[in-house]
Length: 89
Length: 74
Image (cartoon, rainbow over all chains, first blue to last red; front, side):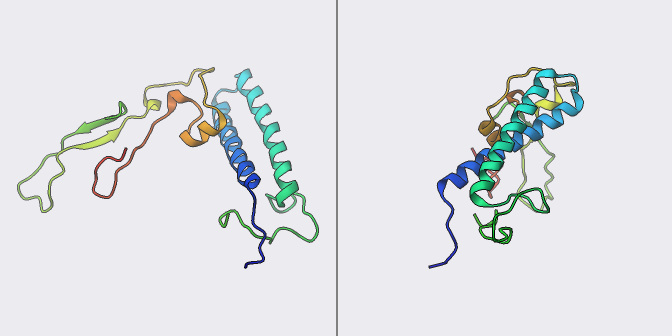
């Protein structure tokens, strides 16, 4: 039996939510580049980026850092090389 | 045929080495018809937007694609 820890259902839920929030943020950023005075879109963008930050924090609390070079905290021992990597999941 | 797909009929020569493709299609996405996106268009929810690949239904352009034999894949 491999000694790697298997990820649970919550991992996939959080990852899916993170991806959908990120996609909305990308779309809104591109939209706002050409619609700088759209107040509703800006409010929505800020709301989504706040939610994205919370989801990322919860994810990192359970499953380790998402980003490297100081953009995410790490537990002990250094968690970055731990599997599973995103393409293995 | 989805409303965004249009067809054209290429010329078929008697000397064509391969079986001719008499009908070919191309996609006409909605962004061709919207000069400047108006603010306040209705939006998909986040998971739906991820699945559709666009945030605003008005700009959604489905691409069914083709299977290996060139038939349209629904």
